[in-house]
Image 1 (cartoon, rainbow, N blue to C red):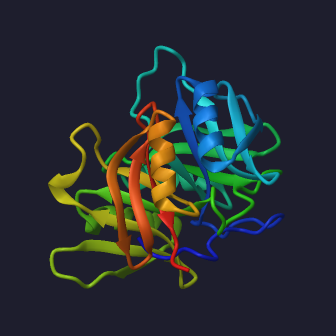
Image 2: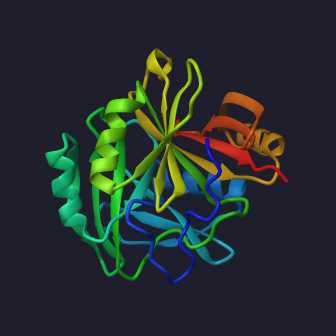
Image 3: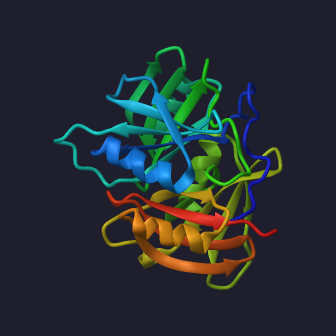
Length: 264
């Protein structure tokens, strides 16, 4: 994980192309999932675009931070928070995704007046979204508890999949030079916006390559206790890193995410 301060677009401004600008989760139990994240992060909810089924936007202090949608009962997909990467032309990005060996599963389509979206996957199968903003530019607040702090792709190895993202979204890369540690940071305009972590055969057996969202919290240990009390699960206990105190958890439906308490 790398510090990501400054990667979010302020209210009323669009995100630079390639920057993670939104994060969304599809679940079966929309009401119970709202209860879990509302209690954990202090989110409130209001309805959002309904093209793909029931959908709500999570708000923190009145600012939009994330989205949660409901899957049809017969759809059984791995639950995961999905980052949306900003694009100035989502149709062109979708075509580039296909040309570079990725897959477009949904879209391009309009989300009412909010913007235009695509949901696709990279050549390794990791799912991501693409967002072309109109009325809705994306996450409107950052750097406080309850907001996305970082996005990281867990994959088998970084080299080949990084080339895909660099070609599609125009990233520069900054590898971590360390024996036995396969990690690189993706940059836009010299600023870190996401990470790619090659973990080889350490990927969870029930998941292929996938994106993981880190959410800022005030106290990682207190939040871990809350996760358990609310019916979630601790997958990796809290540990101190150079970027803060981090833990990996899952919500009651199994969606994995990380908690990070940034250094003072």
